[in-house]
Every structure is written in C-alpha cells, then in structure tokens.
Length: 216
Image 1 (cartoon, helix red, strand yellow):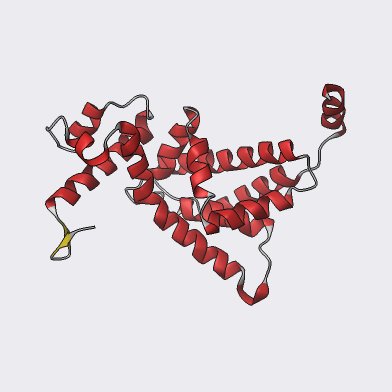
Image 2: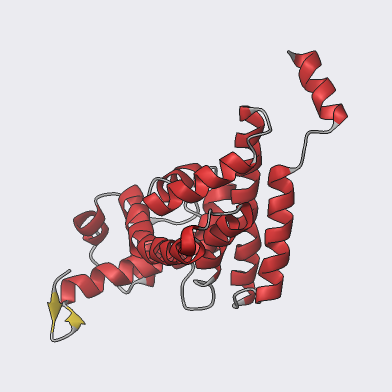
C-alpha cells in the first residue's frame, strides 16, 4: 500500500472509498441489487471506468471488500486461539465457536458492514465461498477442524449440515446486531454460543435415524 506522509495517496483513497461504498450498498441491498453506477455514485466517482481500473469487475470489487475486512477478523481469531491454547490446552467446541463469532461481532458498529454484507450474500447463495476462504487460513482450519471433530459422532453429511447451520446462524444473528448499530453484549453472545454448541453436537433423534435408514 503506497502511503504519503502517513496518509493514503490519491489513488488509494479512491480505491478505499469504492470498497467502503460497495460494502455498505451490498449490505443494504445485496450483491445483485447494486449496480456499478450505484457504487460509483456513492463513492463520489464520475469516471465510468474507475471500478474496472481498480478491480476489473464487480466480482473483483466484492473480493476486494473481503480482502479489506477479513485480515483483521482472522488476526483477532488467531489471537483468541492462541489465548485458548495457552499451557497446552486443547481447543474446546465452545472456544472454537467463540473464535468464529467474537471477531465478527467486534466489527459491528464501527462504520463496518462486513457482517451485514455476508448476510446478504447468504440470502443470495453466495456465502459458501467466503466461509471456505475464511476456513482456509491456519486459524480458520484449526477452528473448523475442532468443530468437525466435536460432531464426529454424527454421519459426515450431518456434520456438514450442522456446520452450515451454525455458520449461517452466526452471520444471521450478528447481522441483526449490525441493523441495531451495536455489537452484542457478552451475555448475548454467550447465550448464542450455547445454542450453536447444542445445535452442533446434538445426537440424531430416533425419528431422524429411522428416516435415514428408510432412505438408504
């Protein structure tokens, strides 16, 4: 990143304005509900080729939003994981869920609409690739592996279903906080972690087992 006297240079300021305008519009109206012209206007840009110049395509701009926000989330996730692992401790299911949720929760209410944008992507069927990218880092991989191991008593397809449910629920719950303009209080987030842990590790009911057997 090119800097001048501690500030972004003109080109980098333009790029950041476009990224932040895109994030806010994607969060409000979804990826499909926003045009490049909408983003240019919100960023105060009149050159019709400016997004192409900096990002190539609308998808490129969406990727740039993720690149702008996710490193800080992953860094905080890593700090939490290291804290939990002190003294040779093994990461627990609950701690792994905290490591997923808390860094995202801490973005809320800081002129940062990353979580709300992820919620819109979920509604449009575009969230999976972002979850996959988040879980591909060393921090994400450790957390995801811990959660999968916690649900290891379940059939593999059910583990995938439960993890999708938990990850999507985290985004949905935190997006509501974004709509209110404040992060969840510790007690609120702790109660949600309770629910996510229960949803992940709950045994199959007799009804579900019978239905799966009949289907097989």
